[in-house]
Length: 314
Image (tube, rainbow, N blue to C red):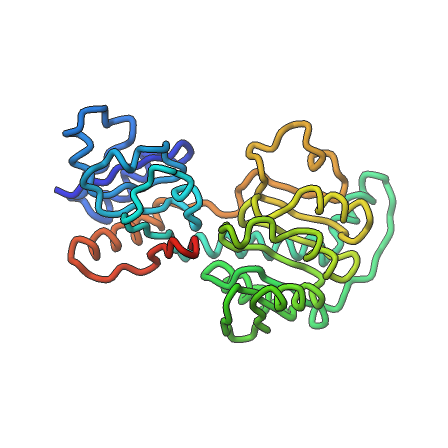
């Protein structure tokens, strides 16, 4: 019998259990709380399905064949200093997650594009002031990250008539997207875009990428939406740019510290819009299909898509 261990402090374990059973009835599913310290219990585990697993948990599973991420990124797995280096890690790539993230990107972009941030302040002040909207076909949006999620964001924003630019560390080509790459391409793209949307994986190379250099390369009064990881943004640089007017507003779903401390200046800043890391949720009913498909591939000795490249971090 094939056995998968689920370790997550936030995911609905029972729903995962039900969803996996629908796709693979013969699969045995155990929650982390259901295994003890007995080595025999841990020796039965074939796969670990995890989100921020306790450090050392994966290393304590002597026969585990692969780690399956309950997230688009794998930084939560790579953070474990005891992670066995040879163990394959499978990224979660799910169409429903990509669609949810793209919905949020569109919402955040339109929020600023249609001046909802301004009208909210006018409402609170009981002011009736009609503004004039920008012409969408002449308005550029830049997507940081051109993987599955970034590609879906680009497609949806392009379908609405925006000029869509995209940036990746290495050259890429997407239909309808003006693609940029590398350090020079990043600032080149920023200089052309009123809005930037970050959906990058968090790696040592992308840590702090939303900084004063990127912000100052943008046209004055631009806007940033970050739905990737809080580690991408330098908070001090964002706040300084908001106060100086270099940025007109930011929409954040992710933060360097989560939950965001009550004393953080983002809470009360009138140019900051934020949500508590809800832009995309991995829905077990959808994701169980890819989890089971990958387990079947590994059991059959077949190639597995979306394996993490540990040298790149994604």
